[in-house]
Length: 325
Image 1 (cartoon, rainbow, N blue to C red):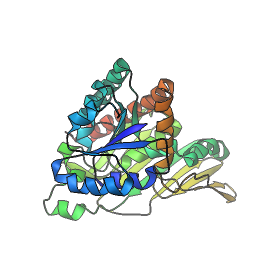
Image 2 (cartoon, rainbow, N blue to C red):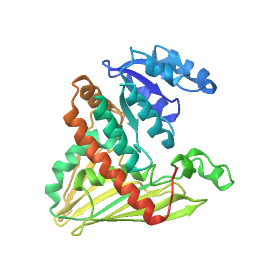
Image 3 (spheres, rainbow, N blue to C red):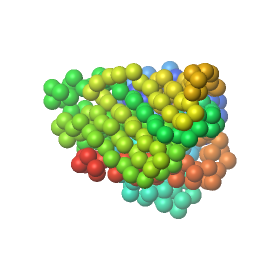
Image 4 (cartoon, one colour):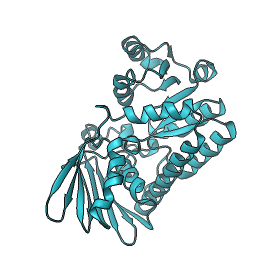
């Protein structure tokens, strides 16, 4: 894979600490604005990126680049992905894919028409420990209740309360708790259980954006609660309860370092098949394989999942009266 990184924010800085462990991914360029050129030069020199570009058009015309990794604020995902697809570039787009499911469906149709690969960067779907959770579900019997709590006081919340509206809390830029940390919970649950029958979102709304909220996913015979908060904090934990036991994950659903299986007699076993210390390693290993093999079948499966998640987000935002973009 010959990759161009679009953006230079926190996620890119984090990504770059890991990507050197995947030798089949060549860092052809990092792309941003003139304002961020000095920062990008530092990243270029530190991580061996071949060039810095301040023109996205120039990036898309570069024949040495076959794939772009879009790591920009949420509201830019759709337009940047669309331009790349129309330029015959494969696209890896950070979560959430887009601000609404209709945009995601348009990207999907364009990718197929232009015969390029389109993938959402959502860590938990690719983690070996997540796959082991799927295998462990049978040990806890029939699932009854799932609670995912990803509550983390945002470093930007104090500024937000004072009137400084940064992207993380800007409705026009696709901010808010549901689209940020709670999106991991949605992917986690639906990757295990599929599409729910009913979706509702009870949100704490300030300045037209959800600073925290409780997403309810009703499967009929099982009830799921996904809590995401940027205005408060609590132990970050997920519990899957069955009639024969439970699975407990301490920490965010974006990482899953390990998990514990407990039966009804309180006998427990810790499970840890972690492959790499960095949560993004396994997804980019798989992205490189999918793109190298032109594996449209696997891409389609992942897009089906992402489209389901975006539909749930649409329903949740609508039920809370929140409009993004």
